[in-house]
Every structure is written in C-alpha cells, then in structure tokens.
Length: 79
Image (cartoon, one colour):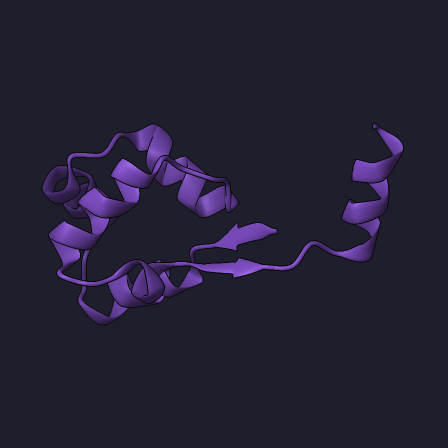
C-alpha cells in the first residue's frame, strides 16, 4: 500500500494554512513537508502532531491506496 496526503493538502487550502504555518504549529520539519508532497511514509508521531495542530483525525489528512500491479510485480521480483 502507498499513502496519499491529498486530503491534508486540501484541508490546508480550505483553512488557508501555509506550509510554514503547519510546520510551526505542528512542530514538524521541512523534511516532513517533503514527505507529504512526495507521498512518502512518515512516523505516526508526526501524523499525530499534524492532527493535533489542525484539530482533525488521520482520516482527514491521509488515505492508504493499494499498490499498482506494476509496483507489486517489482516488489515480488526483488525477493
């Protein structure tokens, strides 16, 4: 499965919150912001920090997506 943070990005737009504001309020680094933009996994404590800062739940900011067939085949071929 892969993770998608589009919900977070939409929430930030709706609430007019900049990346800098989120970083400051959630006490997260620019590295975490890059992970959000690239759809990479981040530690659960960072998800918690973001949720506390935005007064929301993880379901409001992320979703898990099934791996594509190609990604699954690549994963299996490296075993």
